[in-house]
Image 1: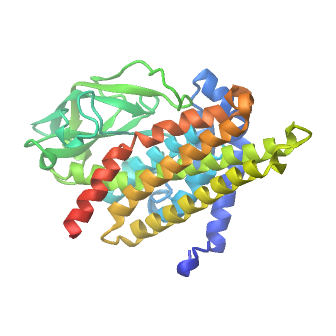
Image 2 (image 1 turned 90 degrees about the vertical axis):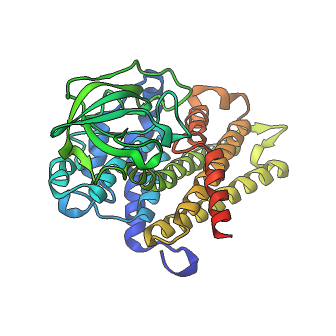
Image 3 (image 1 turned 30 degrees about the horizontal axis):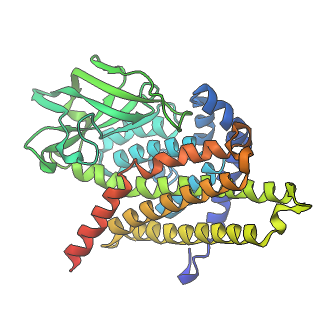
Length: 383
């Protein structure tokens, strides 16, 4: 992007259009069926990986695309026009790959990243637990040092991709209470003692599994720890800065798709002798929705640019973007459903699925209430 006009460069336009074409051809035609059948399309994910979408901000030396966070939000928004659930899982997978690339040592990068960037192996991010969600620094999963291994016990909750994923970035307690006692371990699916709960029955995001990850006396090599002991909470939060703007981008793509469906429907649907889009009251609603989407997109790009530049206010801006864009996008999608009337409530039109998928975006990657806490603390600190 250049200057204050937020104009995309030619390469960014090409990247966005490539992702949008993939979404149109490979995601959108199957999204309803995947949702209804709770089908996780791993082979389709690997097709996305072949386009460079599984290691978006991983360095090229280890199989990644070496792109920016700004490029990433363009990609995730474009993918979400086809299916917000799949776009969101791709975001999570990229978050883990990015954590390993940023905080891992050279051996870890060489061992894990090529397979993650090709999606020969899938990744999941494991922070939340049954007894601590928003209060993540109170996590209880324990890792006790035993020679060259940690013995890990605990349960992780609401883990996207769990059971299907091969690699789990797990935040564990290796030391004192609070954030300074947390470390990050890479735990592999086939390690003895790793098991999974049942696939959760969810309102949306049905095209990806969500399960507990259960860890019972799992022996994890010390060599699988990212960075030194005690920086796991920092790693987790750094990952979430990018994850939050990505999930905002997934909301935006879903809302844009719902909006486009509403525009098409209103052009074809007639009432009282004329098309719905001829009624000024409905035109005004479309105008408000289009304005909301453009404002959300502009601010999302602003937050992504701050994260790329590593500005001091980047975390605050990412929290603001996550809250504002996910709230706005859900409202736009819900309004699109309303404009469809009774047909919007039917699965065949695809709008109700988008509404169901986007609802969880206001909860995960830190609830929007927690985003307000982050913003308020940042402002108080600045004061």
